[in-house]
Image (tube, rainbow, N blue to C red; front, top):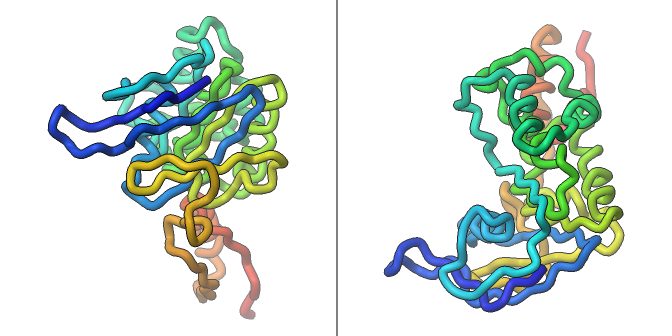
Length: 244
């Protein structure tokens, strides 16, 4: 797959969001896309997935089967989780979604309407619909955002499996969740320019360049709900003290 002088702008007179991007993607590649907020990462991912057309240039060699998981799964649809995944499986020629739902720990979500899901739970649905059909190109927009610890731990292995069978994985990721994978390629998108390698100054995080550890005191009976809520928002959380 190749990007050749790919540019994109919104409207004929809009500013250029991506300018003359050149890059090659080979079977087995796993690529982390980073850059500051508003740099055009989501736009580039949509171009790669075929959901948007370049204003100039061309994207060639896209695999026949593409899986795309957006950063915010659209929950305003009149389905339960099971009904939605069954529908998507039919659209994709009878793909099996059940093993993926089990692997991502979704059994307790299957009867819920999409509109009742938390961000992290909705993100799981988006991941399953993206990977159920064994895509040759898997495009993930902030895949770790809002996920619980177990799902976050499983996701790098899933990306590695797609790559091992000759697929390509491209993920926009502020959290560096794929950094442990051998051979990981890094793209950076800054000021509309796509470059191989991390941005100057290192990895850019959505919450800022640094991190802090915060201790919170709360009633014992509120602890489970608090921990669950924080983990669904993507924060590593653990109990460090129990007060009698």
